[in-house]
Amino acid sequence: MKLTRLFQPRNPLFWMMVALNTLSMALAWIVQNRPLNTLGLLLVAGFAVANAVWGAWLAWRLVREPRPGADKP
Image (cartoon, rainbow, N blue to C red):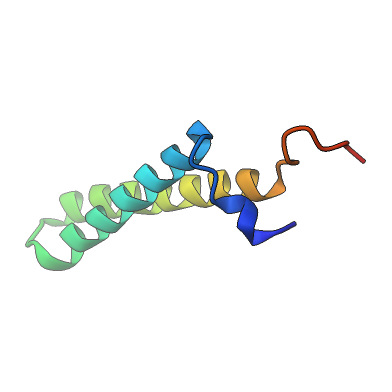
């Protein structure tokens, strides 16, 4: 497993991971810098955590995926 496999601009999973992680960062910023009531805080924080987990899962899939054209063990 190589970390260099994470950067795959031709793979749609890469761009989904980038978008989800950017959205998670924006949602975390909103939670920290905007006054929200308890329900709003929980909803936005929940979406931020869910996006971060989904983005991490996509990153894991990109790193674990074999190279195109490589023989599978």
